[in-house]
Image (cartoon, rainbow, N blue to C red; front, side, top):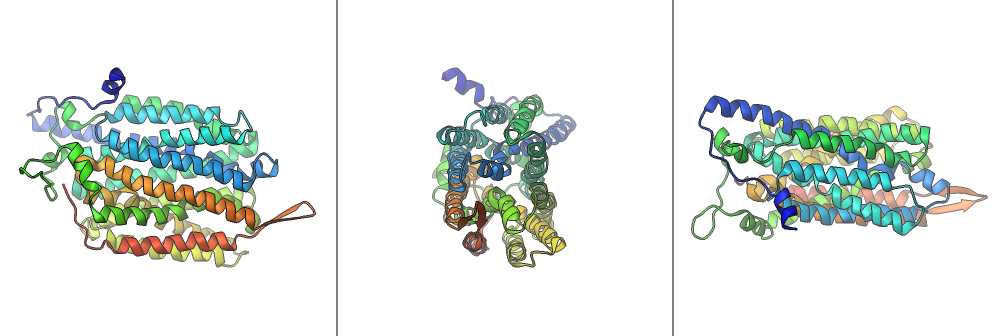
Length: 450
């Protein structure tokens, strides 16, 4: 156990390099590598958590599982992810992110390769829950890397770029995995991502780096001369990592933000988890066409995450609440068109999904982590992300169970023809977004900390 802890622990600080040109060159080179690994690499690893969303209809149609049972399996991943994100968030603040993140991606890939080899509900739920735990290595590791390598005034832009990983992963799943399932069978919704992410884990291990100080570099705040509000202990000394982690639990703004994120994640995972089934049954779309609609959403989400960071940094002086409100109004409007607009207007549905993905991913970037990192001590960036994460994913998991139950209760079978009533689930999904933006807007005066 001691050897394991040492393997994952962050390295010792090296004597600081004095050559400013060398410092600049090293920061420039490593920051590019960090961004590519945590954005593209995290995007590919994301496919290992969404396979179940693509294969729900085949599993229901073949009688392997019911919608309610799939809700149980889906919630297992989200509960596992919620706990994993919290625990791993606290660990990530102390970890060598290069090793920590690569290990999580590798283990998630191996779990995906084990999926589909049994049709027992308990086996699926256990494996998918374990997968959730290992998926919980990703987001805290990304946030800790961003906090270590990018300063306050630029973090929004780079966080937005990193957040495109969500959209990259969702797009690869809803389009690429859907194609694999259509060609080779539902098992490849798990096996395809698993095989790819073994390679991804190896690449991340090669190119990721630990904290700048372990390479002899100054902190990014010193390098950029970009410090926020300093936080110290009762003796006026800078907080240690463990002290900073405890402090976030006492901050009311963090609790409100966690609830706002939780409500937003209910809608997000409702669309990700049940959107394809909704489009197939309520709108008559094929699997590939339904996956394409979600693909439009995730493609637009890439632009939305990047735009959020640039707009909040450049136009609002790194203030997030005004942009949160704009994105919230746009997201809710798009959902109303998707669910209540004309069913035969494919172009309108496509545009609505594009605006939904654009605005939602801005909110994912902000409420799911960036805003928390802004207002929490930077030494506790991983813990702040984990704290927000457990609220978000417990809510997402609870949504999965509720949505599965509501859909099952609204299902009727006449002459072997299955008919779905999505009216109540839709109200539940839209209402969650409304509550989220109300809570987020209440944090209008929250301040950035160092």
